[in-house]
View (cartoon, rainbow, N blue to C red):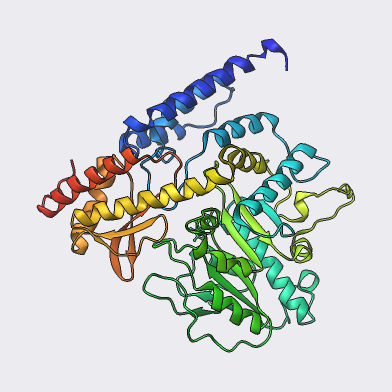
Length: 463
Ligand SMILES: *Cc1c(COP(=O)(O)O)cnc(C)c1O
């Protein structure tokens, strides 16, 4: 590209606007105003223009209508779902990798991207203490990580029963028993359906009062079987009782898969690792980088101890795809052409270091405990044991709780979502961002105090 192409001023404009946006997050409402969303939608409903616009005008449009309509989830007071921000190094890596525009499906299409892919996987395994021989794939999120892991699991347990699922599919195959905890995440059930294993034909293990699957009433399992465990309940953060359940799974010859979307990162913390070490004996793990590692979307990780099982389920050959002798990511991922998300993961881990990852996890967990004790002081009812970064809280009766959630979202100081926890309407708080400070926690508690007191005084009006 020639120096006079205008690219330099365009990208400087983009990075200036991005910095302006991020620096403004602290002072704007966390949820977007209805009017900003409405005006964006109105602008987006225009027909495709006949003639193109200048890039700087496109960018100006995005910033004018897009930026105000965004949810400020990159800031420090967004506690909805399980949502990380983007670490500065990871965001900057995303900018630069965008310019590189590498197709990271193979070594030949991009040796650099393939090398970052592999390096990111190596460091992730080091950070979590997962054996180096484990194979993996960088995918769009935990959902697709489930898909890669469970495709490998399905084919492997069927091959042990003498059936080639890869070649012959599921028609006529021996039945696979799939066992999940009663509080399995909905994404895993979706993946079971995508893999022809069915959402509903699962056996469910009972869960304790925190939502962790118990090693009680373990069923009799004969033949091919896959056991799915969870490290980090999406509401409470609870862990399944992995140790004894995996021992049982081994005794029946089952494949053990772990949904550790955010909770598996406990392994990176010196203080919290003990809660998750039981899961290290599994065969596969699916988890996110875009949640607790704080890289941009979309970024998830699949790890599988049996390299051949993952490669057998995911490999792809074609006349123009000559084997390079190097590691080609597409032989381990569901997709082929793909962006170089390994660059951001590598950048995040490089900027944090091993200790920094643990400190990020510990800090968010400490902040969650501080919120829980502050809420208890406000006479709200914390419903879960705060073992990780998740707090589930009720404010008196159902109506008051729902009112506090609605008022708090309208207040804009922070954003927390509603849930139903063991039959009871509640508010959930997930502290998962590098950007959250102690001051954010204090500000959040003051906002909750104010809205709780207005909601209990019977005032229905939102301000
Ligand atoms: C978020 C989450 C998922 C799904 O992850 P995606 O990245 O959205 O695909 C699965 N399991 C648990 C426990 C989660 O929290």
